[in-house]
Structure formats: C-alpha cells, structure tokens
Length: 122
Length: 113
Image (tube, rainbow over all chains, first blue to last red; front, side, top):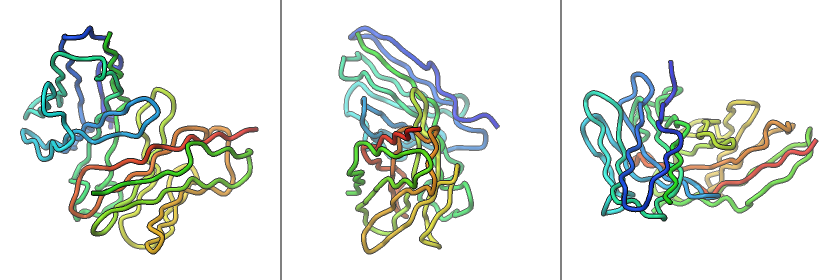
C-alpha cells in the first residue's frame, strides 16, 4: 500500500505565477488535510477535505489560496499570484476516517503524511 | 483554541542514555495526542498516539509517551537513545470534536555517540 504521494517535491515559481501542488492519499483514504511548514517551525493547519467537499478551511488565507479534492484524481492546493512569503513546505496528510471520529481502532484516527512539496518563490 | 508547547528547542543526549522530549497541551474536551518524527527533507512519520485507555502508550522504534491529565502533558520517552534517533520531533493535539492537528514548534533531538 503506497503512502501519501505528493508532487512535485520541489517547485520554483516567480512572484505572480501560480503554484499547483498535488496530493494522492493512501489507498482507501477519503480524508485529506493540508498543512504548511515554515522553516524551523511546526506545521500549521490549512484545510481539511473529504471527497468533493471542503470540511474545514479555517487555516486557509482568504485570498489566492484554494483547495479541491475531486471525485477522481488527487487533491490540489492552488496558490495564485505567489509572493515570497508563500515559500514553505506544504504537507498533505490522509486518513481513512475523520481524526475526531469514534473509530478508535489501531490506525483509524491517524493522519499519514506525505513527503511534502517545497515551494520556493523567487 | 487548542495549543501545544514544546519548551525545548533542542535536546542533547548521549547514545545509550534515556531521553525525554517534553510536550504540554491545551484543548477543550477529550484530548487526542500524537507524536511525529521528521527527518531532513522528509515528511512526518507517525510514532504513537493517545486517544483513551492506558496513560502509558508504546509506539514505534522503542518510543513511549505518558499521558498526564492533571499536568496536561504528553512527554515522549525512550529508555536508551540511538544515534539514528536524531531528528525533529513534533507533538500534536486535537480533540474528540475536531479534525485539524495543532502542532508544537518541534524539538530537535541530537544523540551523540
């Protein structure tokens, strides 16, 4: 069972361009979470999606950022008109059930992380 | 609002000695607590979790953590450190009503031979 796959691993954009980050969850996982990590800091929650639905986007900047998780295909985090402050590592995680769910089995509440996409804005 | 504090930016320990990485949390409701490890240029790897049950939780690679409700702590421990344990460790919390993980700032563990 392949893990959470993120691509590209590294992405370089110039200011004003668009960045599209892709995340394929683990097989059988329908819950996807995006986090951003600034250098030497912890991860900050951005958005939580379930197939075709945004469940919680309380951590997403109000402008330029959007996320989707279509019925078919990977989840996409899209950043329009990137600025230097967007430079960070973006991590995707997936889980088979909601983290808060009552499924307390061995692996059901765990968010499994991908290797991340490191975005550099020039 | 929920929060996590990892008071030590770095912990240094000699190989073979016990290690402790500290974590305290604040959350409403029942806490769900997690430890993850991050190696350079890699994603986070799950180590262990506390949802309910025994306060002492055993996880991967010989790590364990003790949930202390009165002190709102969830310290990570290992009886005998290995050089290969050197990495960045993150504590995270959510609760029985939430789905987003709130992470601490991370603690860099350095194990010297």
